[in-house]
Image 1 (cartoon, rainbow, N blue to C red):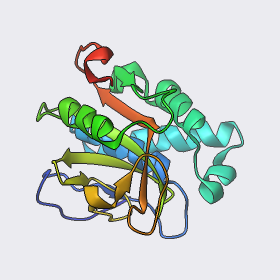
Image 2 (tube, rainbow, N blue to C red):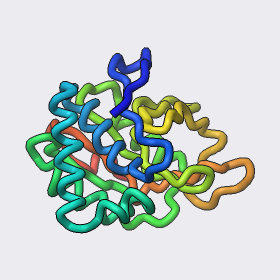
Image 3 (cartoon, helix red, strand yellow):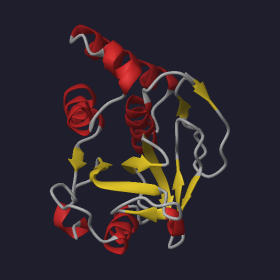
Image 4 (cartoon, rainbow, N blue to C red):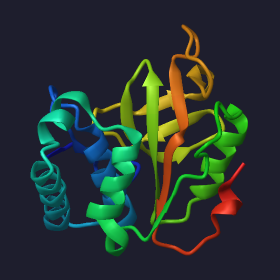
Length: 191
């Protein structure tokens, strides 16, 4: 797994290969690394566990070529990553079709309020069909901790409804995971 240097977090994200569709797995790995400050050995073990899990179920070729859908991500996070690595997995926008961008944006800001040991895995569509990790969110931009070297999504280019030529980054709130090891009430990040 390759890494690249990045000044904001201190720990650079792991990168996926140029021809695979494993951004979902790498978003899980990078989120877990951010939350736990995992060593390279611990991260390699998580990667191995993820690959073995997919291989045993005959899913590895499918995910390598076609990527991972939301329901499969949730199963992988719960069964492979588990409570020992990430104790809280919340999807506060599940079942809310096309929520308001401002409300969704603010819920992420509130969750990532500078508290260490938290990460948000974000599903994207539109310009990118991709899973990524939000490192930081300001009023104007989402800063990513991303396996494909995407660094920033300007708010002016984001939407939660329908992508257009101007708002080309379709954020998928119902496919956004709030991850942490701290105790909190999910309603505090809800809409």
